[in-house]
Image 1: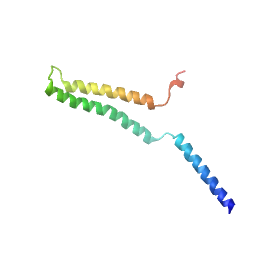
Image 2: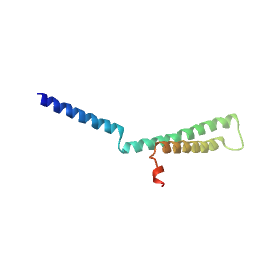
Image 3: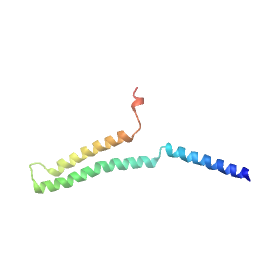
Image 4: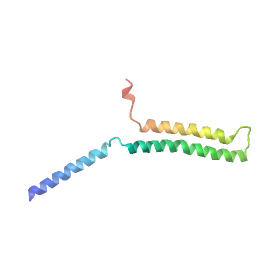
Length: 100
């Protein structure tokens, strides 16, 4: 009976080690790429749409010769691209070792 308990304890130990290893070093997943794509999309879309609404409001409050919505939409795209670029650099693989 103790032999059966020893096998069970060994099985549990190996299973726990596999789970710990999987948690510490997750492999590449297609869902991770899809999530990154979504985050990049939202980081461009939110400032762009925010710029459009702010521009529409500024057109009523402080009209100018130029179009506030167009200017702020372009500004939102630039801000979103900067946010996306910084997020990708932070989350992406470390490329520094490959340059040398």
